Image (tube, one colour):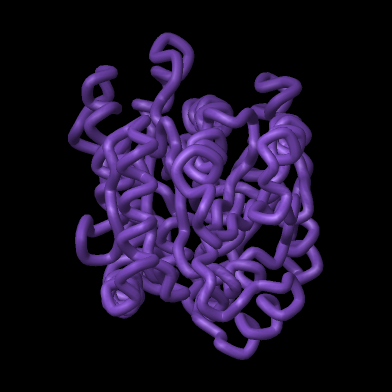
Length: 358
């Protein structure tokens, strides 16, 4: 069986890291020999515990050193293909491709950055974009359309699925009535604007002061202390539940009814699909690739960017019309299982790999 080496700057919790972890695990189960080179992290440790060979690569510290180390790994372990993730990993992999001629697949989890720095990525064999939005942006930046492919990220539907018993348990634990509408937002909290936490606080304080809604916040970052301070200052301590960083996101999401993500920008919005897989309709600003995840008016709502009043109105609509909420829930689960499963994602990757193997 062919040997595939995945390269990513770090393996903590995040979209690109979860993608790499999921793909490696699935390929391993399919019989491939898979390897990981990264800056380390808890997901790398998990893969190591599963028997996946992992190597330390200081991509963020030194690209020349990382390229030298990566070339040594490729030669020593007779790697057949590199799958790079993130701009820095792509640049390092491109240097090794020039030296050894090894095929390289690259997944762009976000938009491309500085074209002058990342131009070497255009030399790689296949560039996978996680949304049509990312592909359009890459073409506008001068990347060749001929080797740009759109392949959506997959959801582990065995993990992200509804569980009424856990829902009841968590609601009881947090003192939430069974009929209370619970919103959830899952993201890194860089600041209160980046992923839209400020808009959600504004909705709760300015529009929904008389509503019984709860907001569950999952994630950490420099903005979390600021968020907690604002929650106290706005008198929202009874409405907002800050869970911080969690490795059991699917478990925590069981208590929610609706997933909200009023981000300023999203290349795709994987967490929206994760929520829908669990029967949680999604509400997000219509930015970037969110319209490729949410079918507006069928699995959730797309809201005009920065429009707090419309955001409130869409949440209110689902609260008042529980039949519509249930319909969105069912349709969202079907939509995810049709378009965004791990099996579909890895099946499509296998097709790409095999073209480069032979």
